[in-house]
Length: 294
DNA sequence: TTGCAGGGGTCAA
DNA sequence: TTGACCCCTGCA
Picture 1 (cartoon, rainbow, N blue to C red):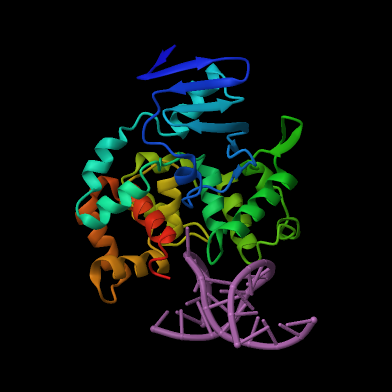
Picture 2: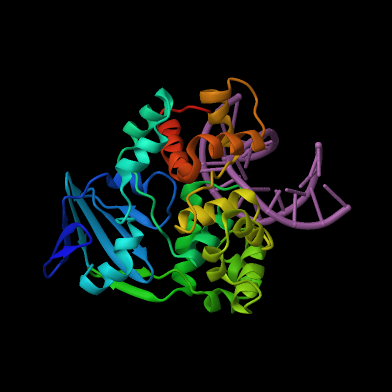
């Protein structure tokens, strides 16, 4: 069948997407934006998204999503993989100089995954002062303890716990996932969202500055976490999540001297505009793999 | 083996 | 602006 410009076929295993451009599973799943895709021995990736398990196999031009069928593809996966976006246009817009041209070429298969907002919020609260493998482990533990059980190919997987699932947990229960002081943040945020004191669905209706301010009301959410949540939930693309490491990379690649957080943000807004967040992904992945800013 | 510094951040003083 | 925070990792 033809679906919004893609040639998609379904068999008993799942979806086969032909003519897939601007996608590489390593670039996309291992650039630091997501925490629930695991590489299998055969090089494919298995992940849990919105309570569904899928296995992604990629060969140039063709993406196979095992365990993904027509309804879910249209309702979940098309948006999740940002398939409606023309990345050649993004690349043109952010390829402003030699540095960015190199970064874009190196990470040419990065796609911004549109993750479930609640999961993105909690995941990035957990990311504070923390490293990727440990964040992945904490999220996996939380899902195993408080998420719905799912099965695929004889293995157990777990959905990310919903708002009420986490709001119902005591601090002691949350602490069993060994997230340390972040457990208190999770508990208060879950309580605020469950009580309706904070409405996640409002974020899409606000402009970027207001959405960021709104998120900052939550306990455990500062500028970096707010920008990550907005970017990786697919809510806003004109943010440039800046942590100490991104700042160091920008100093090395662009400023050639110390630069403030504000300076980095202004530079991104002026040069990358509405695609700042995607530009950050290319730059960040390039810098990490080339050990820039270490 | 043990001990210690520091981490892709946030909060509160 | 600065230290504390929970836990883990890397390194001496």
